[in-house]
Amino acid sequence: MHLRHLSLIDFRSYHSAEVALAPGITTLLGRNGQGKTNLVEAAGFVATLGSHRVATDAPLVRHGAKSAIVRAAVVRDGRETTVELEIVPGRANRARLNKSPLTRPRDVLGTLRTVLFAPEDLALVKGDPAERRRFLDDLLVARQPRWVGVRGDYDKALRQRNALLRSSQHLWRAGRRGVAEHRLAPGETVEQARASAEETLGVWDAQVAQVGASLTYARLRLLRDLTPYVAEAYATISDDTSPATATYRSSLEGSVAEAIAAGEVPDQEQLYAATLEVMQARRREEQERGVTLVGPHRDELVLALGELPAKGYASHGESWSIALALRLAAFRLLQHDVGTDPVLVLDDVFAELDTGRRERLAQLISTCEQVLITAAVPEDVPTWLSGRGVILDVVDGTVTPRGQERGAGEVSDPEPDAGDTETS
Image (cartoon, rainbow, N blue to C red; front, top):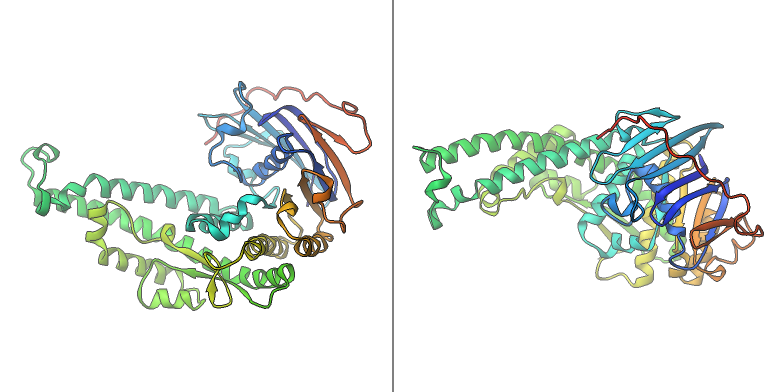
C-alpha cells in the first residue's frame, strides 16, 4: 500500500497543493511553519478522519475559507483508489470514493492505513490515561474499521447515562441537603422521583455495560496481539536490557479484573456481568457524583520498564523509545493482519532522538513500502538515510522536488463537483 498523489484545497495553510509521491522514502524538508506537517496531517486525515494535532475539524480549514478538500490516490496490490474528503466546519463532512458519493465518511476507513509518529506521542507515556486509551481505540479502528461505530455507540450511551446521573443528583442528596420542590413533578414525592430515575438508569446500565463489554473485549484481544511487537521494537530501538511491557488495568473489580491484570481475555458475557455488578456496587457514589465510574472510559493502559511504571520513572530517552515502540508495534501488527505495509509517517521525530536511536530507527524503516519523513534541516535526517529516496523542499507552502526550480510543474486543481450528499 502506498500513497501516489495528495491534493489539497484550502487545507490548513494551503490554498492549493498537488504532491506526487512514490514508494520508498520521501523526505519533506523545510523550516518550521512552512507547511510540511500539514501535508502528512492531510494524509493522516484520509486514513483516520481525524488529526493528530487537534481534536476538531475547524482548524483544518484555511482561514477565510468555508471548507477544505483533501484528495488522495491510494495504490494497493496494483489497484488505485481515489478518496476525496470535504471538511465543512459546523456541518457534516462529505466523502467520495472513486468519485462516487458515500452515505457516511467512515466508509472510506481502511482504504488508506497510516501509522504516524510525532512529537505529540510523548504524551503516550507521560500524558493522561485518555491518551493511551485513544491509542488503543485508534489502532482498533485501523485494524478493523467497523469498531469506529462501536466506539461511537459507547460514547453516546455514556453521555446519556452521565446526563441522567447529573439531572437526578438532587434526588440522592435529599437526605443531606433537601430537594428543591420545583424540581419535582406536581404531586410527586421524592421516593417516586427516585424510583423513576432508578428505572431509567437501569436501562442505560444495560446499554453502557453491553457496548462497553464489547469494546473492552476488543481492546484486550488487540493488546494481547500487540505486546510481543512492543517488547521487540523497544529492545531494538533502545538497546536497553530492561523489557518494555504494556498491561491493561480495568475499572472492574473481583476475579474478572484479576484475570485481565494477568493478561487473560474474559469473554464478553463475563465482562458484561462484571460491569453491571460493579455499577450496582458503586450506584450511590455514581448518583451523588453524577458521573459513570466504571467502563472502558475509566480503564488504563499501563506501560512499564522492568518492574517500574514508565510514567514518572522512565528517562526522557526511554520515554521516547517506548512511544516509538508503540507506533512501530502498531505498524507490525497492521502489516501482519492486512498483509501489506501501512504508510509510515515520521513527523519531525529524528530531531528528538539521540544518534544511536536515530540510526537504529533508520535501519528499521528501510524496508517499509512507503515512509514519509518531515525534517527542518538535512542534519535531522540520519546519515543512514541520506541520499536515499526523494527529497521534497517545502517553502512557503510550495512543494518542489529537490533539484527542480520552484513553480515548475505546479498544477491548479479544479473545484470539486457540486452535488455531494451531506453525511454524518
